[in-house]
Amino acid sequence: MEILRITGGRPLRGTLAVQGSKNAVLPILAATAAIPGRFTLSNCPSIRDVAVTRTILEGLGLSVAGRDEVLSIDSTGPVGSGPDPVPAGQLRSSVLLLGALLARLGEAAIPLPGGCVLGARPLDLHLRSLEALGVQVRCENGRLLCRGRPSGGAVLLRYPSVGATENLILAALGAAGPVLILGAAREPEICDLAAFLTACGAEIRGAGTSCVRVLPGPLHGAAHRILPDRIEAATWLCAAAATGGDLSLSALLPDQLRPVLNVLSRAGCEITEAKDRLRLRADALRAPGPIVTGPCPAFPTDAQAPVMAALLRAAGITVIEETVFSDRFRHVPGLRAFGADVEITGRIARIRGVDRLHGAAAAATDLRGAAALVIAALAAEGESRITDARHLDRGYARFAERLRALGADAAEVG
Ligand code: EPZ
Image 1: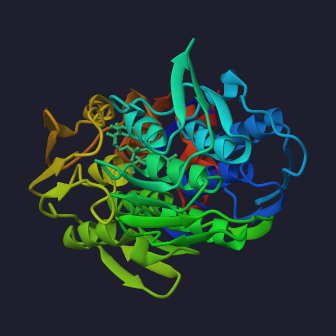
Image 2: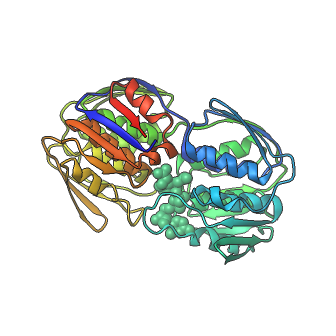
Image 3: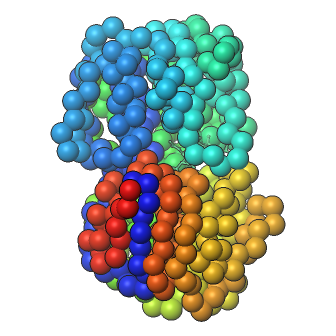
């Protein structure tokens, strides 16, 4: 999808089943390269990052068959140690093949990863930690060359990096002894990776806490249902909140969205919850108080842009501090095109609610920033055109179709 045309001013109403989590399925797909076996993954989101990862895995020698949201993967044959740089360079999550291939082969040659431009995205936490486990790491011609079976031992992450935690868990599967990860990330997607690996026979303790222990042992294939996507759910809730809508979401885990639900509730949304569903009704919004993003259990950085867009007309002033990425306000110029009043000072955004937003043309810069532009367009009066809308395809399945199902006037153009 290159251009998304939206005529706003209509409340989003209806029901939607949340897709499987992009940030859970990607590390789990990487994990299938670590373990010789046959795997069935259900609730896989039909998104471009999954399609690209599937190409990478097939290039390594795995076979991947897919029907709807079920992927069947066979990694029992020989597996290469170096993914194709073209697809691997499109995703940040391709770096997780480092840990997976080290576990399986004792070596890996990974192209430097791609992914959303959100400021600096170094790999020092991944690489220094692997070195602490005795892995030799060097970078040559844009590739990370790693060799050596990880030893057992303890590693301390100075920052709870999601990817570094996942890479260490994967590398630890092939380690010579137990691996203790201190300062680990606690995101729900880490727990889903651990649940998948446990189904494969791994012994992993402490996933979801800052201290994770992996005991290497024999592993085998498994079936696993991917966790619901808490950020996709947050995105839809923000779209409903921004348009005075009435949205029921199913197939999600409200507790994994708690920081976002608290903000939307403080902003005046009426939220009713059940076990795996919730309903949000919104009218006029008010500033919910300060929002500070951070590692789980803090407010998720991935929901920052959609929530900012939902609050553009909230009465009062909202302050958002982005503590995770150094440049994650790239969607703000696009929001200003709709008439938003947002001031940026370093990592602080100050949103003054305006009465109205008007249609505009704006270019998407990254996945969640693109979602923010869509939310602003839905709340704006008149027609908007969002270019570079292909960013949405990376993480939101059938986005325009699902928008229309909720009553939005949205069309893919070009
Ligand atoms: C994962 O990225 C997610 N991606 C991101 O979601 C998410 O924003 C991020 O975690 C934080 O929650 C996937 O899971 C595929 P990090 P990741 O390592 O692992 C710094 C989306 O929109 N850092 O936790 O790359 C880094 O620069 C995407 O779905 C180092 O300094 O995030 C950043 O400031 C965007 N050195 C912070 O840590 C390192 O070696 C958090 O990064 C690694 C990271």
